[in-house]
Image (cartoon, rainbow, N blue to C red; front, side, top):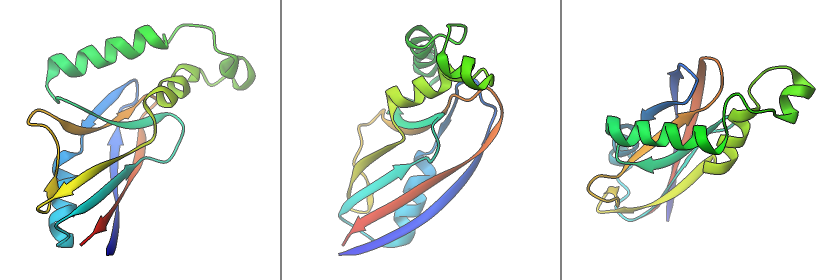
Length: 139
């Protein structure tokens, strides 16, 4: 059993910026030589998340609209009242989708559906440089 790690950095524009990480994850997997196992994808922080979706403009826009309905930007948030930074909605959105996920690796590749891509969702109200941790375990 082997363990390999790396960290990606991606600049985001905030305001529910969604970036496709699939190629980066597959490139990392290819560099490790690990054929079977699991890959962890995680973003530190409380205003971003990692999930999967079909990365095409319609599905991405649908996700943006869905999180706006669930945690509207202009709603009243106790976080905003306490800190005054106006990003209470981004903390709630991140908590709903989660900061990490684990996916299977088979024959050295992500074991995902045909139209399933790994994405970073940055919900903060300002541009950020996000660090995405990748860790694969297997043999």
